[in-house]
Image 1 (tube, helix red, strand yellow):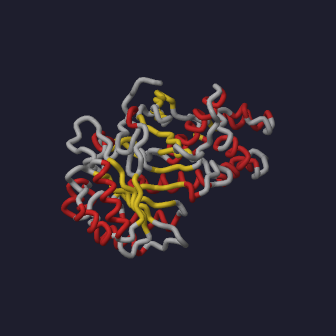
Image 2 (cartoon, rainbow, N blue to C red):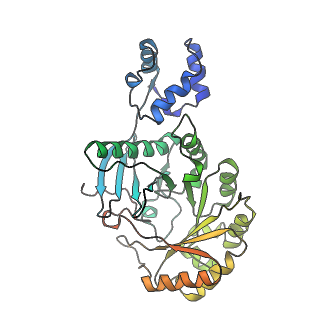
Image 3 (tube, helix red, strand yellow):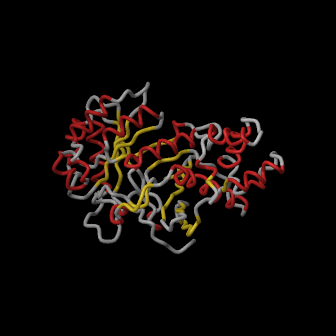
Length: 353
C-alpha cells in the first residue's frame, strides 16, 4: 500500500528524491502542493516533470477524509462530519465572526474522548482512538476545500484566520501527534499559519502543558469550570490526578513571552458553579497568572443533567471578576441549531443544509 505523502517530513521526502536523482528543493515544492494548494493527485503538480510525477504516483498517495455530511446553521456556522479511512468519524466546525473577517476553524484531535467531562457530549462516546498528525491537518485542508467550493458557487469568499483545538478529544492526551500537526500547520512548506493564530485547549494535563509551551508558540486555553477541587472532580475527573493547586501552579510557572495570557474557559452551569462565591474564588485562584477568562454558556445535548446559567447570572458573574481585576468575556454560542456549539460535538449525522 502506498505511503501517505502527508506523513513525510521534508527531510524524508528529500532523501527519497535524492535516490531518484532529483534536487532536494523539490521536497518543499511537492509538500506545498499538498498542504497549500490542496492537491489530491500528483498529476496536478504541473511544475514537476512527467517522470517524477509518475514515480511519485508509484510510491505515494495523497489520501484525505471523506466529507460525510455538511450542516449549515442559521448563523452561518458550518459543521463538517468527516469519515476516516478506518471508519471512524470526527467533526470540524467553521465559525465566522459576526462583525469581522475572522473565521475560526475548530478541529478535533481524537475520535471520541476519554476525559469524561460531565458537561461535554463528546465524553459520552468514550475514546475510540487518537488521530495521526496528517488526520488533524486534513481537517484544515477539507475546510479550505469547502470554502473554495462555496466561493465557486457564488458565496462570499472567506479564508480561515484562526485554528482552535477545541473539537472532539483532549489534544494533550495525543500530544506527540498534536505537536507534529502544529509543526505542519505553521511550516512555510505546510499550511503556513502563524502560531499566534492557533490555540490548544486542554482539561489540564500538567506535564503536557509544559511540553506544549516548550515545543510550540501557540496559545494555551485551560478548561477550568470550577473553583474547588470537590466541585471540579465531579465535573472533570482529570482533577483527581491534577488538582487545582497543581494545575494553576504549573500555569504560574509557564514562561509566557511578553503580554501573552492563558485563557481559562469556564462553562456556566446553572446552580452548580455560577454563584458570586464562585466568582470570588475564581478571582483568587487566578491571582498572579497572566490570564483572561472566557465564560461559556452551557450548550445542552440529549441526556445531560445540566442547564445553562441565565444570561443575567453570567453578566453578574463577569462583573464580579472584572471588579477583581480579572479580564473576562462571554463567548457567544454559535451553531447550536446544528449541534456545533461548544461541548456538543458527538459525530452524529444531521440533515444537510
